[in-house]
Image 1: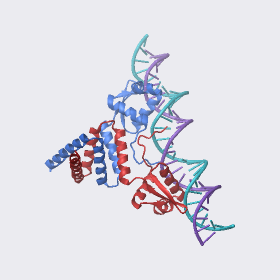
Image 2: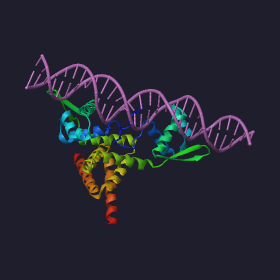
Image 3: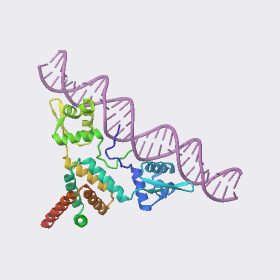
Image 4: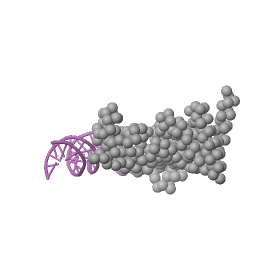
Length: 134
Length: 134
DNA sequence: CAAAAAACCGACCGTCAAGCGGTGTTGGGT
DNA sequence: ACCCAACACCGCTTGACGGTCGGTTTTTTG
């Protein structure tokens, strides 16, 4: 009866495969197996299964080239990550945006002051853009 | 072989229970069952199991009062949420803090301009604090 | 001491990712 | 046109986990 709290979470192999595809643009099962299946000692079949599952989840697109499927990420790494982040946030905090923002700032600070600076710049930029549109 | 990508993720019932405990401070199984088990039509046993699993995961503390365990969150809602956020971020982005920050700002903006304002204030505050310490 | 209350144990179910073997399908070379 | 290698697809197993509960034991208390 498991109703996942955070829909788009990936397994270990899945995440690795996505990472590879984000990095290399697109690939077919054979390539993916070559690049990480070998090291893990898993079958080409396993890689194919994983690719297919990712496809069925809508995370990958594919098209046929001769008899092989060529897989490509449906969303960019950025889009996916920000989607996951949004999922988590909305799931976690029922409307408590305040707390979330505060937590994020803390996290950013701990990650390094330069990131805090970067954050400030970005926010300023967005607000300027908003004001201009108004 | 599931190796969760994000360790501290909760199931549906678990999340609901945590939420209740964060709101009410502490409670024993009976109370929890009273408040949400009834509505769901689940047994007191189910609630007890859930509480126990949460305890075993280290998310709850408990102490005995007469024969009942009284459960209480080990971390505040804030601490837990910011921990989960941190987990996700570090898991998702291998060092790509930049992208994360940017994604978060977008999310905040979409959530509403007032949040963007709030974010700006918070960042400014932190930076001031940092500078003062230096 | 007995009844009531609650914890504990163990089981079952559904779901999901990982993993793989076997079989079907097909494109391309001869 | 035909055959074979390459690849897809199907179905299954395993392990983990959350939700759910029945049955048993332990503990409190009247």
